[in-house]
Every structure is written in structure tokens, then in C-alpha cells.
Image (spheres, one colour):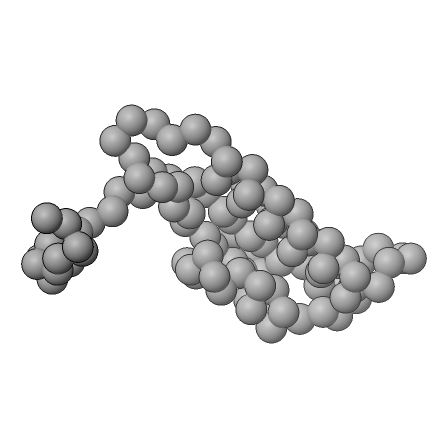
Amino acid sequence: MKKTFVLNHPKIVPARQVESIKSEIRKYIKRERNKVLPKGVDYWDFDCKYGATEQEAQVIHLSEINKSIDSGDLSKDASFYIEVLVKDGIRVISEEDEDLDYGEE
């Protein structure tokens, strides 16, 4: 999902538009996570960017999307760019985790 959201609807309050945008992003993430994983992939990971424009977008963590949108300027002519791209995630087991005995005999 690569999209620029504009908050200048004449009848909808910007705060309600922000809530609907967050909902749209959550739905997209949920839809992507429900897709079948390819062989050798442990989970779906996401590359995220947020900024006023596509050129100004900074890399953020998935959990920071709502914070970034909330901290953004909610003026009447405000807009922002968000990018959420799916990538394969492979779990890396550290040596500490390998040393732990999880009750296996």
C-alpha cells in the first residue's frame, strides 16, 4: 500500500478521517497477514514509511504507524504519505534460545 491521504473533506471532521484512515491501514495489514505463507517463510513482515510527501517519508516500525498519524498536523489542508509493503519474515534463533530447555526430553 502506497498512498497519500488528504484531510480536506468539506463535511467530515479531520479527526474522523484520521480514524477511518487508521482503520483502512489495519484492514490492509490484516488482509496481508491472512495470506498463505510461501514455503520457508515463518511470518509476514512489513516495511513502513511515513511522511508529508513520498520524498520526505521516513522509515518507521509497524507499531509506530498510529503514533505517527496522531502526531501529524491535522490542519484543514493537511495530507500525509504512508507506505506499507509486505516482505517475507524468517525467524532467527539466537544461541541463547537454543540453549534453553523447553521441557523437551
